[in-house]
Image (cartoon, helix red, strand yellow):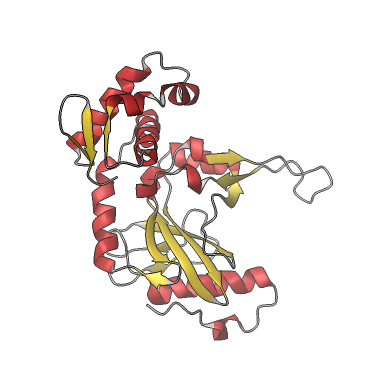
Length: 258
């Protein structure tokens, strides 16, 4: 994997945004394998396709690329996206590609993250204020993707601070988290909220009361549910059945993949 961009292909483009789009997309075509099935290369869709930028010929997975320039090693907690209502429709209709988030500096990839499409929920999409009446697209409403609200296990590092990870590790991690796929958005939201609570516990082992401590926070996120503790136990069992945590003794758990 060559982390440097091929700047020669940007000849003839004038704006910085056009140059950035061309060189980052070209980098993916030249360097990126399919993190879903491990196929050696991704193919690029024709320009201006509304849903995705790349696809895998082997498993037919779709991918979108969002990139930004940053001199710092830290990944942004949110990135800008397109129309808010279009994004919500994509998520709720399950017509959403996997997402690559790339940061770069000095024409070199610094970070590259894969966010599998099944980690998207409406709760991570932030609605921006409508454009002012004086704007060319007055009233248009954009959105931000709040990456920081996605569980850490749903942010698969491909390149971290200029160092690439082994392809086998990336594909294995994707296959591992793919067991969390569900078409039920409410279930998806609860599951990821519980995962984030577990990730926030610093110790490798925890007890039920450690998770119950997040009850009020979870109630605020899910006001329609009056049985938060029952839901917590249900989700812990779900994560146990999929090998992400282990029951050690009654009311006590051990992290396996979190």
